[in-house]
Length: 118
Image 1 (spheres, rainbow, N blue to C red):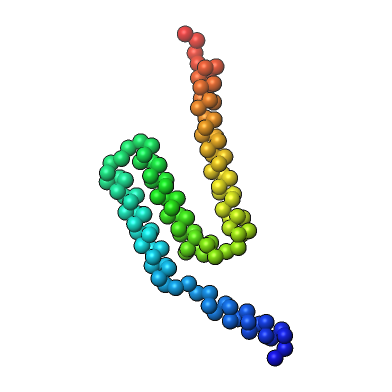
Image 2 (cartoon, rainbow, N blue to C red; image 1 turned 180 degrees about the horizontal axis):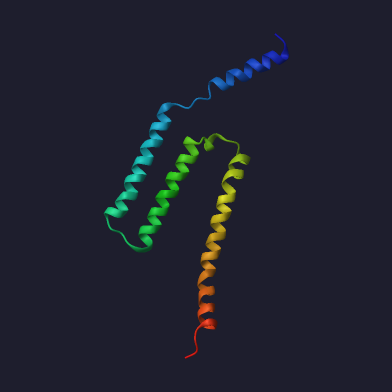
């Protein structure tokens, strides 16, 4: 056996053991089910205001993260690929937060300078 064919069989052996156990997917499905029940309980408990929307967004982010990590196999990818996929949406969220924080000042400035004289 030559050196090249030995490398090919070694790489073929490593690819055979890459399947994830079914139990991992069932546990992930269970966590998604529990998170979905928790998000429905927010409505059932008739929570209002920032608490309601904060909990809904937290549960949404947890479910999305679990789906991306397990079902889209992001947990097993190289760190550079994870950064390439996750950093642009994270940057967009940060910029939206900055715009939301600045929107109060902009609204106040418009109301002050563009309002009709009394």
